[in-house]
Image (tube, rainbow, N blue to C red; front, side, top):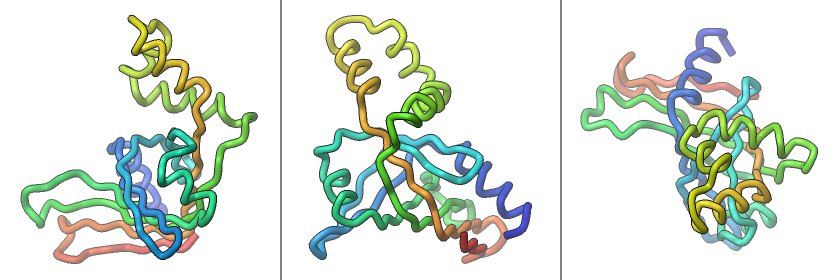
Length: 158
């Protein structure tokens, strides 16, 4: 992996805030859109209720596929990431570190978390504080950048 490719991947991870997570269990695929944060080691983190379909499927099969990209009206501007990796529940020891990353990235959620206004916001803050964070560790990343030419891509095996 070149340092230019790694830099481009990290820039895209920092630029975007949602991913599409694909899971599969019992031969049935599933996709979910989720907010995420990442660290400098290319790990991605999201919070979810452990009883959502994707969380239940991760307990059965931790292998995932992900896409991250902005919606573009013109294909020559398409730029994004495709990833494969493994997901796991974040340990209680790491939970607070990931929560801090999450609150740093999402200012509106941080404000709600520190000063909830009303019962709905208190409920959200409580769920976030006790929520289950998942870590995705990629083992393969494809950078797509049509600005460099149609179908341009660079792949990274990790």
